[in-house]
Image (cartoon, rainbow, N blue to C red; front, top):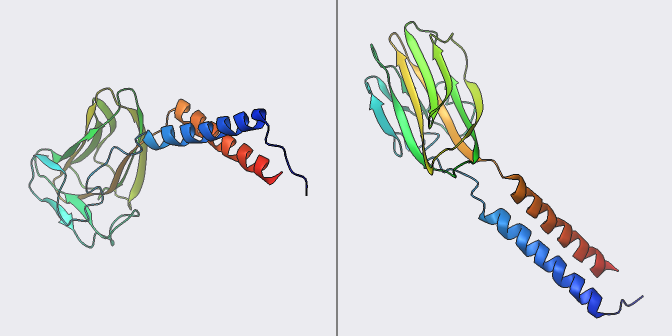
Length: 199
C-alpha cells in the first residue's frame, strides 16, 4: 500500500476542498426554497391561512374532495360557486425581490355558464378564463417574478350554476444560477477530497 506524503501543498489543497464544500452547501442551504403557502391543499378542512375575498357565498372546503381531491396531495379540496359576482381567496407570501417562482395548483372547471376563474401573483395575471369548459382536474404550472418582498397570490371565482375546484397550491423559489454554481463547487470539492483520501 502506497502512503501519500502529507506535504504542505496537499494540506492546503485539502483545506481549499473543505472550504469549497462548506461554502457551496452553506449558500445552497441558506437560499429560501419555498414561499411557504399555508394550507395549500386545504387539509385543515377550512380556509386556514387564506383570506376570503369578495363574494364568499357557496364557497368552502370538502373532505374528501371530488373525486377524492385533486391529483396532488391530501384528501381535501376547495370549492367556489359565487353567484352574480366574483369571490375568492388570497394569501400574502414572503418573497425575494427579483426572484423567480414556480407556481403550481390543481384546477377543475365544471363548464357552467356564467363562470370565471383567474389566478394572480402580485401584479401578474397567471391565468384568466371566462366560462372554461368542463374537465377533470388540470395541473397548472406558471413561472413568475416577485417585484416586492411580500407578494399576494390570489384566486378569483364565479360559477352561477355550479362550482369550480382548487387544490394543491404551491409556490417554490427557483434557485439562482450563482447558488447552483456554488453548490456545484461544493460537490466538486467533496468529490476531490474523497478521491485524494482513496489514494
